Image (cartoon, rainbow, N blue to C red; front, side, top):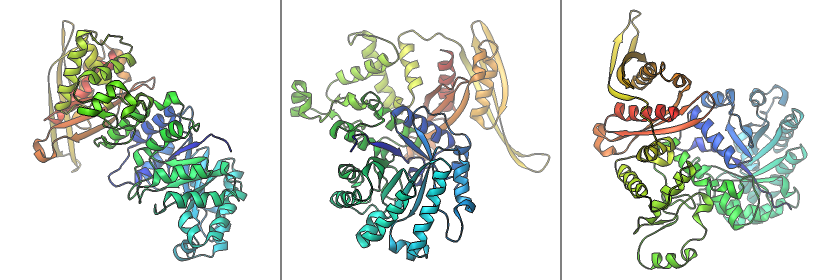
Length: 523
């Protein structure tokens, strides 16, 4: 049995079914790119034809270097041939190199939910997967309700799995769909399946309804499966899916397996977790294993004393292995270390005793109390640091701006809202004033600012605002709440950067983030 485990991420499809999760196209593309950089083997992009968001994603698939994209769908419907099934046709049109089909592995589900015979279900699975193989796509089969089905009727559950395997399926994925199984059950059942299907062709897909999805996935690996499916942060329907942010370091650091995520890439794990949180507009879980802010935090007394002598006293791994940092809450040393680490990533080498380090630590902490969060706004942090070090030229100075919104009926008796921005800036000794209309106040400001700058800085034409997120930091204040705005920008070369603005005024917060975005591009 190989020690290589293949990672399959279903955040963009299964994770999108979670309550409160609504990915934009920019979200899905950004998450896919991060998963690719991390080293995940396969990324499930969604279900073609199921909703406009998934269709938009498949119509503009991101370019990936390592990961392969997979489209998800059902086996052919009863009474249709695989060749004439519209659902399968949509999957083939998606353009992905892999296709994952879901089918029932529980005899009860087949007869009561689908209302067909068990033999017809087997034929639907075989016909569909044979067509996927014939179309030269990598075939995966999600054996839905496999573990519940096995407990009730092991013979039929095995028939389903073997039908998929015999049809040429690369991965037969055993699904704990209801999330009700426990690790000892998973390990026992998977071990039984490996007597019929080699573990090199078996995957595991667990839900977290007993808080056992990670443990169940690792138990399945122990029993022989070589593909593990999950989502970032465990997002998913009901109680969620198996959390890849825990599974990946457990496989590599605790169990000694090889994955597409190398030890070097594993250091990106915390950064990936932060990106997901910002994309979802939620506060990070401080107590998340491996990637949480509190995962390696130590506060006073016995623990701090012991940590000073031996870091393994209260840490199971070096936090740097997963891109996290140790925090000693009674000292500012950890703050300095964190800042120094980020400066090093930016190519700025300073000693811990440099006077600007303590000043920058203090400034960051002060800004965090005001609502700033630099984990997901690396461009704004870099500008802050370089400004304090005197390394950012004054490209332009904004002297004033004004935004007007007018809601009215036009000549065609259509209700329209028009946004107009007026901005006055200074570039060198020249004062420039421009007016522009836009699709909303932020877009109007963006157009006006770039219109004023383009003669001096032609490169601002390359900037595209690809995402805009607003988060209310003080919800109890209602309409007087403090607002945080995150802006994602991209240029013609494909470089992506994120900036942040905070203010009680949403327009002001937006402009601060926009101002940073343009300044970062010019820098």
